[in-house]
Structures are given as structure tokens and as C-alpha cells.
Length: 103
Length: 333
Image (cartoon, rainbow over all chains, first blue to last red; front, side, top):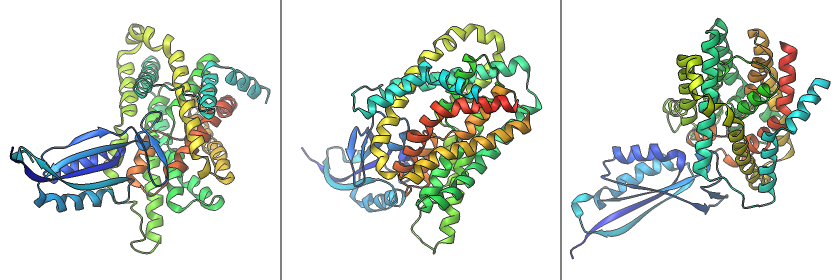
């Protein structure tokens, strides 16, 4: 089966940032994304977990989107500008997709 | 003094406070007891609905008076001012960095609606009435402190060298305040208040089996969860706190409460109303403001402001503070 090269952007972000990040992805013309709850983890400073929090301030989530390689740098830069002072991880990786026109 | 100790004993022996202590003890002893998050969220919505609705019905019964508007204004003013005092104290007596101090200050100007709920529970148990519109005052006091906190942080950033590494204004504070003002607790609280006001005693009669009798049991379950969260937070965040900060989390509610008492005296509130305004001024946020601070002041450490407001000030207010505020409320009236 023929596949097409694309870029996968994976963003682990603080839950309070969700709306702003998704608005930014919309503005950047990203065709689609998936938001996943992150259950628990450990970062440089502290552990965190989804359950047992009264505020969303201590929660993290993951946003995944697939974009065309020609747009990846631009989108990553915009994401970095929004998140540069926050806790989180942004990664970019090469993937192959079947339906190229969707991304 | 005798009155205070009587209220204190009754408070400490109330199911609500005992469930909070149970939760906190379980968390500190690393028990696996927990309330599922979705359940806790539903309990919180129920509490907002019940508190808001009852407040609205009370206003419908007595009709709005000039004190409603004046109380709203006083509440907003207190929420703006308390962070400025808190910030000055933090800068003077604790080793906190400027951004952390600004973030902590915002928490102390804002309010804890659960502390408010426990205070109303104590008033009802003591047969003391209160002005229902204080529910609206509670909602109005949530956001102004955030603006003050951001202003304090920006003021600091401007005083430092250009590009000094703070992102205090990186995200527009206008949209932030809108997000806070429309958070689910506030929408439910204010919405239920207006529904209670519009439907009055007749509406109350139809929903009272849902919002009156189960209220105390739900509050117990919610306080159990709060105890678990506060205990876990204290366990995890204690290394961030030194004695000056812990002391701040205890004397700051008293200072905020004293300002609330002054406001209540000026407004001529009843004993119950004064106790509630003092409670609101003494309480510190741990839901809306931490989320807002992650957006507005991301470099401020959440381990400090969450542990102080939820791990120290909330238990203090629930156990010792509320009996004190009830006593002062009665003196004022």
C-alpha cells in the first residue's frame, strides 16, 4: 500500500492551556488533532497525577496532530511561543500516513 | 471568649470537620482511600447549585436592598486590596521570589466557596440567619484578586531590566479573566442564585428535598475528598514551605478576615452575614486561581501557592477560623 511522509507533533501540556493551544492549532490551519488525558507522570521538579486533584492546575494532557512537513516548522514555532514558559514536552517525529489529503 | 470556645468545640465535633480530618489523616498515612474525580466534580456542582439556589430564594423573600449592591462593591474592593497587603507581607517576611509572591497573593484575595459552604452549615446549625445575597458577593470576589496578582507581577517585571525573563503578560489577561469569570463553579453558583431569586419560595418548595436534606451528607463526602487532597498536597509540597510561609498562611486569613469585619460593620450586615463576609475575606482560592496562575504567571511555582492555600489555610479556616469568624460576626452585629 502506498504511504505518504508526514510529521507528527506530540505536545504534553498543562490542562489549563488546552483551550489556548487548540485555538492556536485552529489558527495555524491544522486539519485535526486528538486530545488524550495523561494519567500520571514525573517531570524535572515533581510528580503529578490526574486523579485526586481539585483544580486542573496540576493536570497534564497530550495533544497529537499530523501535519504536512512543509508546515511543521511554522506550527512548532507558534506552539513554542505559547508554551515556552510552561511545563510540558513538544516532540516532532516522522510518520507515514495512508490518506495524504487528510493532513 | 466563652462563646468562641463553645463554637470551636461544636465545630470540631461536627461531622463535616471530622470527615475532613479523616480524609487528611488517611492521606498523611498513605491510605488508598480516594473519591473518584468525576464524583467529586458532581458533588462540587451539587454544592454550588444548593448554595446558589438557597441564596436566591432568601433574596426573593426579603427583596433586594441597597446593601446588596453595596456588599458587592465592598466584596470586589476587598478582593482587589487583599492581594496588595498579602504581597507586601510576603516580600517583607518571607524569602519568596516576586513572581511567587504575586501568585500567592492572588490566591488570598480570591475565595474558597467550600469554606463559605462550611460556614453557612455552621450558621444553620446555630440557627443564625444570613443575607442570601452573600452568595453573589462570593462569586464577585473570585476574579478581582487575579487582576491584582497579575498587576503586582507586571509591576515587578517593569521594575526589573527589560526582558528580565518573566512571562507575566505573555497571555492576554482580558481573556483570562473572562475564562475565570465563566468557570463552571461560578456559572452554576450565579445561575442557581438567579433561578432561586426568580422562582422564590414556590420554586424552593419543589426542589428542597434535593437541596436541603442531602446537603450536609454531600458536604461531608466533599470535605472527605478535600481532606484527602489537602493531606496529599501537604505531604508532597511541604519541602517548598518554611516556617515564615506557614505562618503567613495562618496570619493572612486573620488579616483578610479583619478587613472583611470592617466591611461588614460599614455595611451593617447581620451576625450571620458578617461572619460570611469575614469568612470570604479570610479564605483563599485553590480551584480557579491556581489554574489562572498557570496561564498568567507560569514561572510561579504551583507547589507553593497550592500547598499554602489548600494544605494550610483551608484546614485552619475549617477548624479554628470559622468559629472565630462567627464570634466576631456576632460582636459586630
